[in-house]
Length: 381
Image 1 (tube, rainbow, N blue to C red):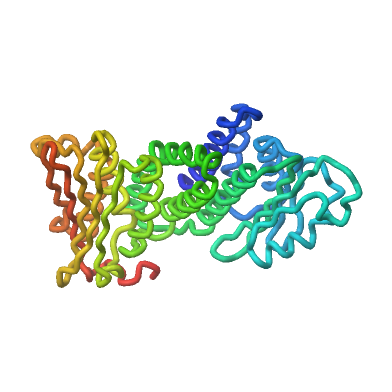
Image 2: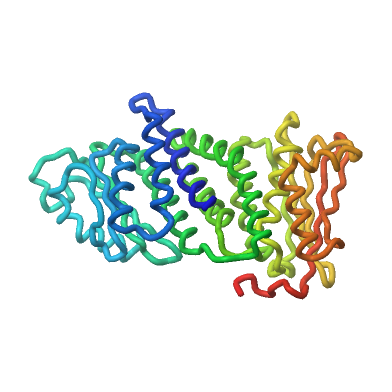
């Protein structure tokens, strides 16, 4: 499953970037390999055979005292490492974490058996919540955890939840549409994902509050973009995903990317093919603004036009010679992919309209019919 493998890669990359920036700890390449090897283990709910390899590889990656994982009822499925004598002390905290869906951090002195000295400095308990339901608790015991370490445990937990969610939602859909969406996901993953995680890892040390907000944006962006259920969504959901994407890009470009957005509320419920807007916005930033000295602004508008919604993604970037547009669009995978899917879904009359000129930026316009035979009025149907 493409989304599943990428979810684990995201977690591995985030942790790699984090530890790379710390002088007191290193991350051997084989540790990343151990985590990547857990991808097949995370396609569904944890079980005893899958939990043991996961905790073993995660403990090697985080270089901590112990790692444990529970089932949805709080019963321990796997424990790798030392401090076994504290398992009974964690039963009540685990129950509380599962009940209130909130992470807990316990010091050694917080435990009933605190008179027994050991390597434990503190324990981080993170609930693994998928669609509002607890799938278990991730237990990480460290010698001397700091806030940065706690944040990285959050990263691992978030992407484990994403992977479990993807496995739960793996439903059959139209083969061609699924293949095209996977192509878009492949385009998103290499450049944006690693730049995003690299930027967030730097902020963890200088501005941990902002880093935590961006991690949440990134987790939500990944959950939406790499979902496997459904080929349709609403404009409102696409705009929410664009908000997350732009929040991360704005942080990465440190003020060089401006955003203007004007969305008519009347069109928020219009149904559209899944993952259409993000590739257009990414194209505007990557090809229009990133290489422009001083950066620029991307403008997104959505207007009500009777039986249709008109959506425009415009940038004031470098632009290009319009005579070259057809030959270049093949290299802009997102643009060509979106155009093909719009034509396939709504007909040739709904192809993208692209306006551009050298030094004058680029404007991409798409039109969405409010009603079309074969297109569900509710994308959840």
